[in-house]
Image (cartoon, rainbow over all chains, first blue to last red; front, side, top):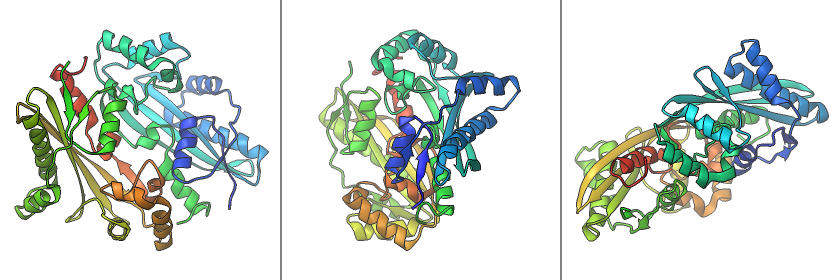
Length: 198
Length: 198
């Protein structure tokens, strides 16, 4: 069986693969994501391309250390209007982020790439569209109080599988993509490469 | 605070509401769902209407016993071509069902209704579209062996949050709808009725 390595520190991605019956070793790739994103942004890159490039970079970094393995890299981006969002470092940033997203639609892009022998051999990107409702300031305060540190783990400062559901009026897109991995496309490619049964 | 009652025995529905921060008492309504569906089908009802009528019937049944409460009824239907599917009673039925769905798209309808004072006061229905890939017979056998009794709990004989992900090539629609409840529409209506904070 092909050795599969997940070059990501995301617990959600590891959980999705494990639940789907895919065994991976976890070896997060050390990439300065914020610096790379800022640089891509200055160069006028589109969000989908930026996410894909970062997923490739992580897969290739992991592949350099494990040339025989098939290495999975992934990246997610949240975009609302012209603004790109990152995981909030603290509750104040989470609050500002949710206020910026309130009453508007945003897109969550998730990209995945595979590398072998040090080079990317496949990449894929998808997005989901989510619309936040026009919640009250009081609701936001109660939400942040109830969620605590949990909101800091997500690029959008929400957990859809928890209280975050009350922030939204509409969600369109694959749930795996929203959680940070285009899982169905990845599974298909792993079958094509013989790493999963057909 | 309004007393909310969920007139459904579905663990998944109770879990979704609880995770979203909605407290409900669970009192499943005794409705002979299969008989009602068969009768609606003979009368030429559309799947969306059948699911809605069943959700209303469950909400009203629960409401008759608890006239002061707001009672939530829900129903889900799986439709592929002309065929309506039910929860498989055993592994042989699960196998036949997955073979019938293989390589094709199907729709999952989820309806929800609210009743008060014995009468339905609101109803809503949505669907998601899921396409199964053309998996091998060997894959199906291994899948059924690995999942065991777990596949019998779902109308489609799959658990998307588990190995079931490997059955699909494409999923379009709200994850809450796929799990059996149009949660976002229900939360909005509960806010309109003053049962949840805005």
